[in-house]
Image (tube, rainbow, N blue to C red; front, side, top):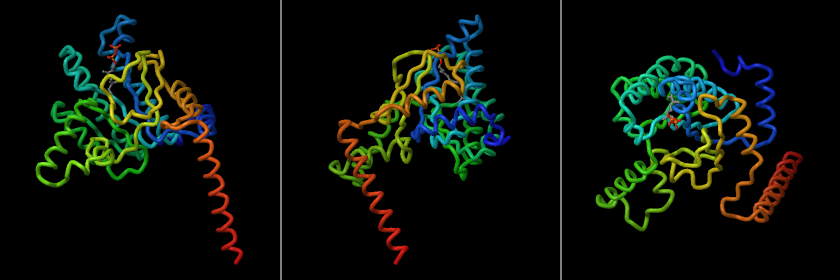
Amino acid sequence: MSWIENQSDEDKKMQQNVKELGKVPKHLAIIMDGNGRWAQNKSMPRVAGHKFGIESVREIVRASSNIGIQYLTLYAFSIENWNRPQIEVKGLMSLLEIYLKKEIDELNLNNVKITTIGKTSSLPHKVQTLLYKAIDKTKDNEGMNLVLALSYSGRWDIMRTVQMIALDVRRGKISPEDINEDYFTSQLQTAGMPDPDLMIRTSGENRISNFYLWELAYSEIYITEKLWPEFKKADLYEALSDFANRERRFGKTSAQLFNEEQTNEIQKTSYLQRVLDAIKK
Ligand code: FPP
């Protein structure tokens, strides 16, 4: 089913409202928290919360793709999550398996490119096989990049990167003076991806929980009280509208940003004038 063709008018209107604000994030990262509490509030086992969480995943993936987000990272399983009760870990792994089996064709049809970050070698074989199949099947797609963070943690990736760079130094491939931010970034699992513009965390917790540590340096953070299974497209649009109204300064002052904008406008106008003059000649 084509997501774009099957949108309701109300949906299109809500998206148009967000787009008109002029700032849709290129990269949205989400900490999907609160599945366990949602289930417990309803006297259900925690795994049921994850199951309903998948319904939110489906809705948010579609809405993000339709609105033009280029990268969507979902923090689905952290390295620390391996320490949860075995029954919950097993349940989560089966849900991942079901998701990958069930959704792959629809994701592919909608031009979504699946990638993954994390220590995926720790995942059960079945999940690894399905994951790599999904990555291979969608590798030429040019729509939204869906980045599944699986057995991922920010510190793990930073440590891994430090080790790789130390090896490069030892092999004489690079000298210590050449290690800069760009080089470091190029060795992370997120190499080639823009940093998240916006990070959403559900369930009201004010933490990063070992998610993107390097990449979130200048990201806007949006925390909602909604638990992940309750987080739906209207909540996403609300978060995106909030983001569009924020001023990102990247360490500069508001006045500097204003001046830069004015200069850009002047440059754009004079460029346009030169093009028009050249056409007239
Ligand atoms: C955090 O809630 C959520 C997780 C550890 C797992 C998230 C996984 C899914 C939504 C399903 C699988 C994902 C994909 C991409 C198919 P919690 O259990 O920590 O909630 P709590 O804080 O209320 O206990």
